[in-house]
Length: 236
Image 1 (cartoon, helix red, strand yellow):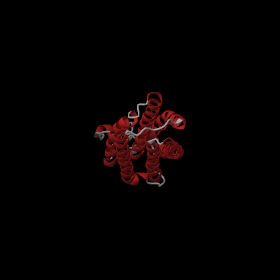
Image 2: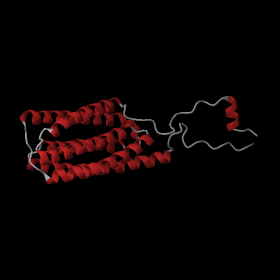
Image 3: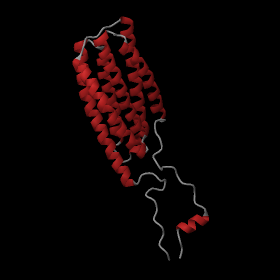
Image 4: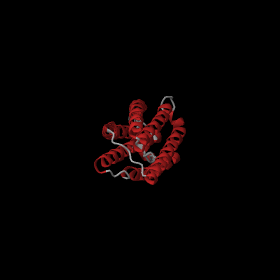
């Protein structure tokens, strides 16, 4: 009797069990790095914002706190052996985090615009925004790649939360710089309202579980015909 041809690593064409374990461990490391960075970011931003009376900086710091809750949800999901069962709960937490962020940014931006609030110059805020603008895209891209290969909607949703922090960093940097150079106090809150709309969209997708793309090669192949089965499993 002939030797059967070897089977693929996964019946669905997706990652093998060993590869999935590697990806899950990688996601946990990315999440840990995100949490650590955001804790430091929150402390620096809120402290600098309070000193400069900057609503944008304080809001940026609170956004970091929200990002920690999102990353913590993914960390909780992947802390168990069967992380797929926790996917829905993690997505709901991430969705609520997006909504909370959008609500806060909208309220504070409206207050700044209507009240004509003028923040003082903040060197610490400018440096923090520049560093975040460089670090966050790298963390987001790395986690998104791992999440897509693993097929984890929550990991991808959390990477979008991190990417949103990149946009907020750019807005914060531009707002602080323009306010310092030209005195255009309204630039930051106006741009933040656009980001609030983006946060609502991402929150809705996370809540519905529409954040995930199928991992490469994860499409299940069509059932083999009888002739193809005989060719794949020779009998003599």
